Length: 299
Image (cartoon, rainbow, N blue to C red; front, side):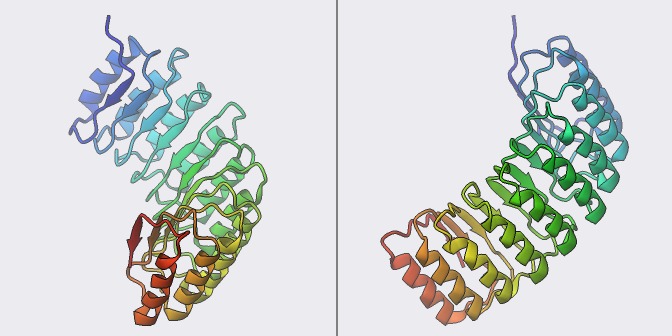
């Protein structure tokens, strides 16, 4: 009698034929499976349609579904979401990173997120060709059911400042319990940064990780961020600001804010900015603070 709880087959080079055999086997005994990892394979849309038959099974209790870089487009996404909607209450983590659902696929995903039975906690949509329209649909859906989501990754998409403003409405919701927000390379500039930080200030206590790498926040955007960091309710542990056009002035404001509330921060990434020697000296003063507990520092 053989029970499988976790099945991890990442980077196994299987395609539709292998996926068909795998899913057929899993359908014969689906109730025990809790995690399925098919990352970096090529089942494509046709393989994902076969996977959908497993997900539709009322005995399926899958909690984690990881499909990073699986060549999934709109058709595959449509089949996947349709299946998940028929059995949404168990799924807590969905990873669709580096696929191509686009705005149309994300709109289909939104119908799942709106379902009151959906208990999704972690949603990974890194590099999924999502623009403003898709972002609007996604955020609208999350606002209707925000309390379960603790991690959201929209990195390498193009919501722009307008999309970030929509995201801000979710963050302002008192029911929002988001702990990790990843917006790496999302074309965010000062206006979007201002809306984002204003929203986070209204509900700061849950956020432990913020990734703004490779945006154009600049010194002005970082000064806005400082108001969040100075908040005594802020519990931020990881702050990622790699390549954010931060100079000496922004670095000075950032370090001053961190010194006022240093005890929670364990990781700070300021790589590929230009704090110059004076900024590094200010950073040194932070490190000398006995309340400062950084474990990882990148400059």
